Length: 104
Image 1 (cartoon, rainbow, N blue to C red):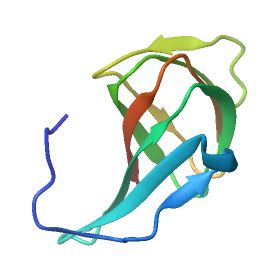
Image 2: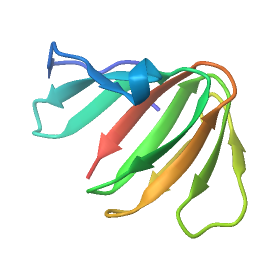
Image 3: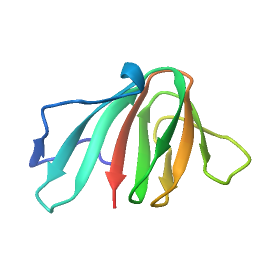
């Protein structure tokens, strides 16, 4: 996990989901890739994916369950999980979660 991203452009308008329980900003890297960086406040939420995602937990604690899985996984800082395209995952933020989502 890298500590920072260099040479990016940022979409100024925030992505606000679930009545403000998740807030992120999209960043565009010079190689054409796109990521979002944000926070999830304590809540239990379901996200749907259109493309594959790698979610990095930068700080905080959460539980995650991918579509089709029976068990929750506990995650914390420096953990990550992959979500396939056209799928979903449940996340329960046990405290404020700082994350990076890598698309594609």
